Length: 513
Image 1 (cartoon, rainbow, N blue to C red):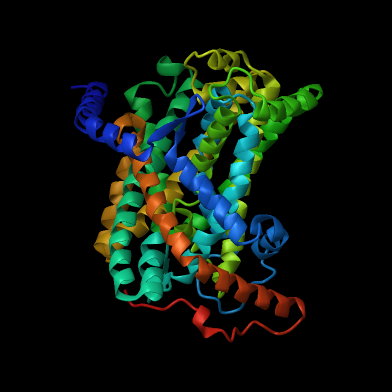
Image 2 (tube, rainbow, N blue to C red):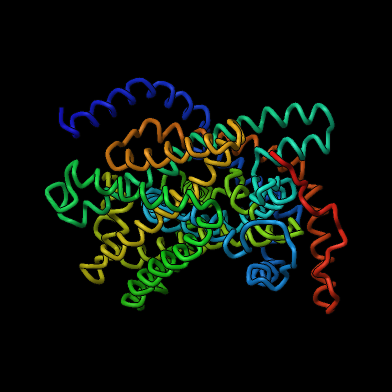
């Protein structure tokens, strides 16, 4: 049996078994209600409402404290002797690498095709709201993290839900928190293996094949797929062995590089079509409030924009706090402020650049997609680049590869923390996970397993339900942490010696787990 026929058989068998489960789960998690001629997924409303609530609760912190967040990420308020593994910038790039991916390229193209150019405006607004949610969940992630005997750190919803709920509500909160922690770990692990690993490798390989001659080209066929999968798996495995310090070092280089390459590419397309910029901006604003040919009119454009932003920046899903929890700090809210930059980078900057590039370049494939033809999102974005220079899709391919690898790395770290929470932190347990995760990377270039990827999406957004309930219940804790950090900032700005923090309760509890 050839490799191609074997992988086809595996795909068919898996799809046949899991398809009913995936369909049921998707119908439940992404349940939609008809609103003025379009469908509103309740999970999107859940995420957006959380952004509105936390933006109000914390007085538009994403705007008022944006300059402070930039100062923190630059290291102005670093303290000697802070517990953690990475600095603020490294924690930010590690988390951004988990959210910035193919969704920023392909997903945005689909959004402006279905929702029209006006979806861009609502996408930006949702990204701004998500900044407040991200601040809350990451502050809790650092507040309730665990520092192990070897100096490594574990954090995320599997830690702040049981600890925070027990602290606020006693025995009942502790019991509920433990159940939610197991569910959170399971959801993170499942999504990471299929959505954060296999899907990323699969789609980046598909893009590589498309620019190297297709199925008959250099990378086409099972041999090219296997080579690519093994190469990615080897890179991922080597970095994972080094833990979050190694991941942060790599993503600290990759994230600025990939964002820079992609944004420069977008700016070149925009610059060449500079005369079309005023018209494109006008089209986006008019489309937001008076869309043409969009199902559901203004509400339709709003829903599509919100959906893309919510799915892209992962604010409220509980994934980013896992990476941010490893930061070196004595004040949890300091990293919460750094984290609010994440949706700004992911959605307000990168997603908007993609949308603006497509609207300005106006490739033929975008027009075809808006007329109902089935055109892949990556194809539309690639065609927008190609309107300037035929070789620009190769630049996009490089960006796609960097996006994919960084996402696989970060989700590998997320998954490992979920795995060790469920199965323990022994060397054997961690090694078993790393071997499994690298094998999934090899499988990503050979298999599609689309049914399991669909299930993974549903599972991740199930996590958002339990995570945001926890965020509401623990928001008062975040308020106290913010006030503590702002008082520290005031003392530091006044020139007082604050390298030795007197607030010992801000230190995470050390464990020997």
